Length: 115
Length: 110
Image (cartoon, rainbow over all chains, first blue to last red; front, side, top):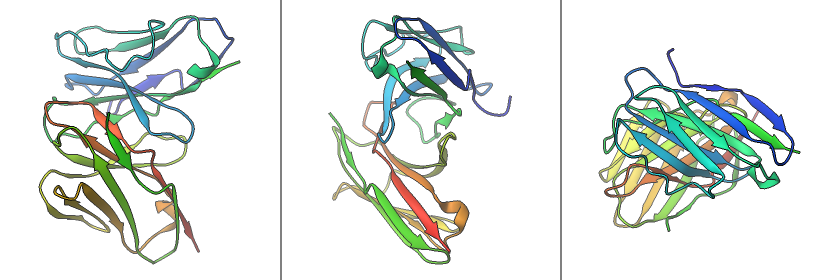
């Protein structure tokens, strides 16, 4: 597609359930990022993928969070045993390459609500 | 950690000018980005500064002073559609992820 695509756009689930969020980056973009945006707060970096290199997981808040990426395409962010504090908008972004002036292009996000 | 500050809210009149300031204290600097985010939508890229000075793009301009750790986004000839949140983001040296400020919500009134 022309832009970064994320699904689902909204997800409501009960505390303790697992959720899986999907990101389809712009074709040809080798770098992919996940961010979390809590209400009224700035974007918080979660994880970064670049090509076939090992991902930078330094932003993941706990071991309940994990992410995978298949080659240079789709990525999934999984949250296990969800807690109410996980409620946020989860944004995915992609860019052509790292360490350049190429901007990150964002998807519309997945709004996650934990009951 | 990285510290990026911007005002929480600003209000201006249609047709006027608004300047959104951003100050940063980071472990290195390798570029500053401004994004616009309408409620419920994706942030969209507005501007990039890596050298000192002013970058102009139509009604929007962005300024950077690396020695002062300071940037501003200038919005001219404000339109109602400019009502949105404006995000300042810094990329630190040898780093590829962006550190974001909390965003400035701009409300344009008729």
